[in-house]
Amino acid sequence: MSNLRVIANELIPVYATEDNQRLINGRELHGFLGVEDKFSQWIQRRIEKYGFEAGEDFFTIPGKSQGGRPSVEYLLTMDTAKEISMVENNERGRQVRKYFIEMERLAKEVKNNVIPLDERQVRMELLKSALEHEERLESVEQRLTEVTRKVEEQITLQHHEQYALQKAINRRVLDLADRAEFQQLGFDEQNYITPDLVKVKRKLYSQIHRSIKDCFAVASYRDIRRCDFEEAMKYVQAWRPRLAA
Image (spheres, rainbow, N blue to C red):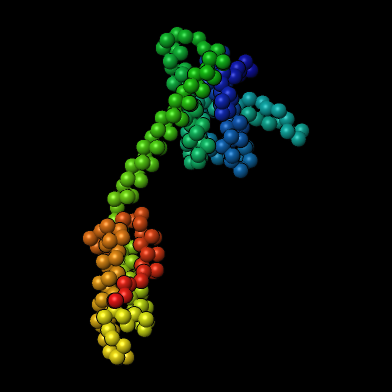
């Protein structure tokens, strides 16, 4: 394990032994993942919890002394590093796991095609693959955003939104029906002294529903699109009827 060489270092270093086994330094992976626990505690918990075997899933070598005390470095196989990254369940874990998978893919291509790759070539291949992945991801995200927008434009109000809008309509009608200024809704001054509020409210309901249909081009307020819900609520709250001439 003393003759390790770095073959890639895009996210974190990837090492190779003389027989081309890929290894990851556990301490460096711990730092990249942003784990708050101390490395020694973290790596021991992962080994015990997931049953990693020394000499098969990881190797230990003496590390630099820290505060006068010798330290131990853990060299993880690619499979072990992938599993540890996955169980961290965060964005960095997913990111570095994809990085390891890409490294394995490149290693298989090299083996199958018997093409020796130096560190510079590996980096170029990784960068190319990463750029292609980002372009595909951006394209998918753009299509998903467009589809989501189109779907949202077609979805009508849910039941609780219909209820909220109907309540707003009721409040607006009751508020307007109590205002003397709307005696012009077909009632003369004498009759409005003791107004027939039922008729007044009926006229107001008829007008406000007609106005909503015209404004939002729907057959009923229930058919208003969800993306227009807030606008519809503001419209109702500010609505005023057409006064009789």
